[in-house]
Image 1 (cartoon, rainbow, N blue to C red):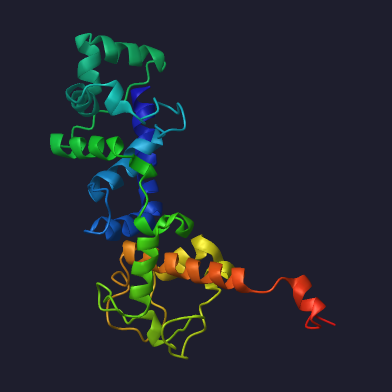
Image 2: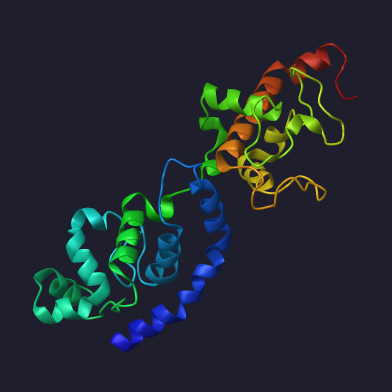
Length: 259
C-alpha cells in the first residue's frame, strides 16, 4: 500500500503546473499588496503534493481533510508526521496509529526531502486559509467600500500614480459624468462593468490593454489592489449610469422607443 500511495502522489506531482497562473496572481498580490502573507513556495508544494490525497474543506479523499488540521493537531506533532509518518506509526504514537487504522493502513509518504522550515511554511499556509486564499483583485467589486471606489477614481484619472508606472486609464478612455474628458483611443468605459461583469474584468485588468504599452513588463502591470480599486470605480460608474437611465416604459411614452 505504501508503494501505491507513493506512486499516486508521485504521478500527480505535475498537477501543480496547472496552477501556475493562479500562483502568479498570488505572487503579485503577496508583494506588499495583499493583507494575507504566505510563502509562495509553500503554496506550490501544497498544491503539487498534498492535494493528491487531501482536500481543503471538501471532506475526506485518500487522507483526511486538511482544513483546520493545525487546530486539531499540535504543530510539533504535524512536523514529525509530515516528515516521517512511518516513524511515528512504528513508535506506537496513538494518533498516528489511529489514523493508520482509520485510513485502511494506507500510510502517508515520508517527505524527508522537506526541511522543518518548509513544512512549517506549509502549515502556516493551511492555517491562514490555504487554497481559499485569493488575490485581492478577485474580490467582487460590489463589496468595495466608498474609500476603495475613491482610490479607483483617483487611479483612473491619474491623481494617484500606478505603482509600476502604467499610464492612467484616462489617457485613452473616458467615462460618463467624469471629472475630465478622457482620451478617445480606447472605448468609453461607462458601462464596461455592466457588460462584462466582475470575473471577465478581473482577467482583462491582469494584462496590458495594448501591445504597444511598454512602461512595465506584463507581469508588472497593475497590482491586485489597484485592479480591485479600478473595478470598484467602474462598478460605481456603471451603477450610476444604469440608475439614471430612463425606464423603457418612459422612453416609449415620450415617443423614443423602438418602432
